[in-house]
Image (tube, rainbow, N blue to C red; front, side, top):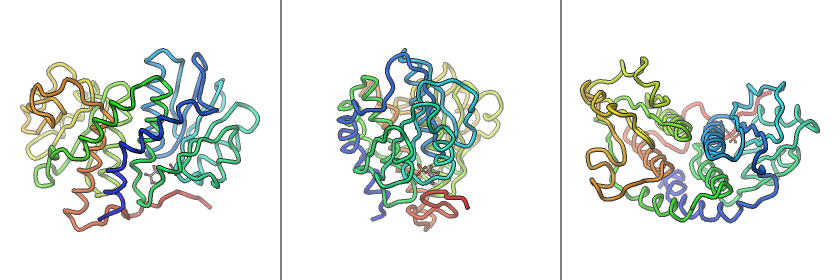
Length: 303
Ligand code: F1P
């Protein structure tokens, strides 16, 4: 079995463990102005957390790719997310901020350079991964950050445990292209789901804020393509997608993954788990090794 399959299945337990770290030093206080940065998957987790923190009234929160950080802005704290702790752009960001702004890094490796560079290091080594493709480190980071915002991680873990077993809502033969949609904090999750498909399987996948979908991307929708929404669905969108011949997927739509009326809310992080499994299926269906995506390395370390 691939490493990524084992890592995907272990997420609910990792989330419970991550939640026990919700009081870690270096997590922001209510009202602080915060920027969260990372690259790739870590950037998408930063986006999800930033939207949630601000939306729930904990303080202004921005998310940036580490390479595009706006150094002129005033923040009370910068949080960098990096599984490897060696990604060049993240190392450069912490070096540039040294002494100017309090910094926190969330990483899987206590020995990584960033752990020594940041003011505070939060180490989720139990969630580290053998697969290049990130799943449980990223979602455990978000689970810890959500626990710090007061979310119920036990309920999330129950949905996650279902998500690792549910029948998959699509199949490679029925989905030559997938577009993931989200609103608010689920935009970052949708972005990550699309990245999983691209990384693990070289599959054509895109992601948009759901209300942006009608502004052009809907032109891609047709038979044997899928539009998969996480979280809140804009009024009328499922019918508009289905008119094109594309399949609309949502945990509660047309029976969804849960069966109509079976359950009112499925945590969008559990949707991401289902999408991770789809990405692995798309890889193996082409004879690819999902642990070793073409051209992608565990960490991007530039000369
Ligand atoms: C970030 C990253 C991942 C990507 C791949 C390569 O690394 O770009 O987002 O999926 O695994 O590394 P890190 O800074 O979180 O270690």
